[in-house]
Length: 232
Image (cartoon, one colour):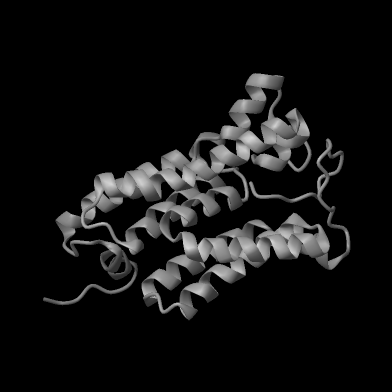
């Protein structure tokens, strides 16, 4: 048989069974994980509690920080936890239920699909949040030790500079480096790198503000500006 090449080969490396028939449950799990991630928790909660469209508030992002701006700290925390759950559930519940044997590659793949759903939700015309909370949830479910080290870097960087965006970017850089240092497989490291690239790309505006000294530091009150970034 001729070995598959290109993106299809990458999918087969993640797929536990390796055959075309075995890939069908994986593709179904990826699709369902995307839909779970695409549930716009911030949009729904702010709409229900405040009667406003979160996309018209602050930065317009559908995430925890904008929920905090629109509805207060309590709602912001709830949104952060729910967004994290959107990543954790596919990796810890959905993947074991739909796929056998369960591998780290599979958990990372379905978790990544949930993050893509959060960042580009079909229910909101593909305009979502930055995916940090969903990424943390997915990675905690798939590889808690690596994620804990990434969160430690987040805490240190935030404590030093009080920029949540800097902590999030540090987390994104740390995860694939720790994967490589702990000798995970090339496929697993590439999946971790995909999480990181997506997170960094979604922080493009924050990076630009940091470079120009215009990024806002964390405020637990209602933020009238649009520069504050947090896991969302």
